Length: 301
Figure 1: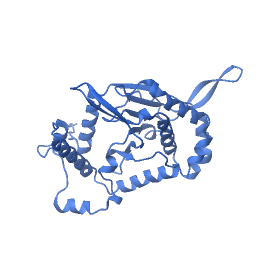
Figure 2: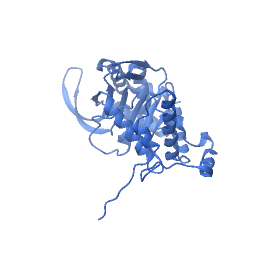
Figure 3: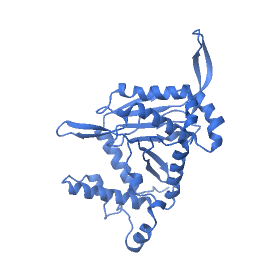
Figure 4: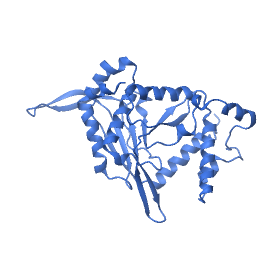
């Protein structure tokens, strides 16, 4: 059987560039959070799912509530290694970067912008609209425009152009970047921006939430670590809901085993910008919602 060689697409080159930079530059700290979501899962099945709202949409909205209570997590870091100094900018607007599988089977990280006060219906409709526009999107073309914009911006600011961006724009050799020209380019750009994804949809948000549990709902295990996009200070990985035997304690302190719904989550943060005590308000807020979930019914519309 012959070996198969596949050269990296612009999309894979972009992923390689960003993830390599993440692991080279960011001191990651990772915490495995495993909340009991039995109460809210039952509420979802009875009251929210019949309305055509996904569990993923509900979890994203809960994460937004957590970020409101832990504002240090919704931030951007600017760090200068040469000077060993920098700054952390806390953001008012919460925008979630979310990996999504396109109709072509390719993976792309899109951004749900300004989700601070979105209802569940608004959040669902935003995701549906992104999926709709993805059908008319050429991923290579969007990625090429992003890479070209980065190159121009760095040159204008007198910055050194990274090898990764040079490779993204490489026009030579077997691994050269394929992008549209001439009439093909004009025809593609004639599609209204409201009907295709653009650079704005792919520009990083303030926090990344990656839901691998949605890819394989029955899987066991959980995230133990995931990369943080450079600039952001937090990434959150979601696993699949699992049934586990859990020790419960009644008011008298008596303990018993019961089958409960557990939702593995991974919270990775940049130790240059955050200490664990700044993550605690996020976890406490999620615990509060999971244990007494009635408030989520106020978020439906």
